[in-house]
Amino acid sequence: MLFFHQTKTFASSNFKLLYEASQAPMFQDELIASVRKLISCFCEYEKIDKDAGINFFLVLQKEAFETPDALNELLGKIAYAAQR
Image (tube, rainbow, N blue to C red):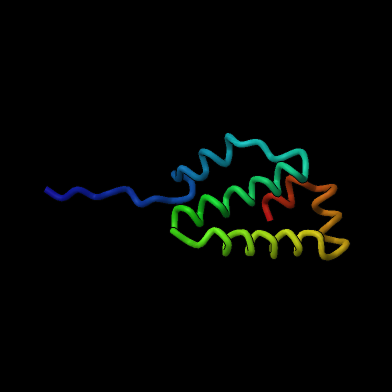
């Protein structure tokens, strides 16, 4: 007897369930802290040097504040910035 495994799709993914249950951040510090924590956890999981993760975060942070458009997005459209 053959058993076929259901193919994982976005519609049936754990990501979608968690994403729909989550709240968009209201403040910039929440978004920035979440990104930093995500990078830190990823580095730990993949056994990537902690300093490399910090440097990557600093590059992203600089990019987020680099242009007036990016800064305005971060200051006024937190939910949009979080998705981007």
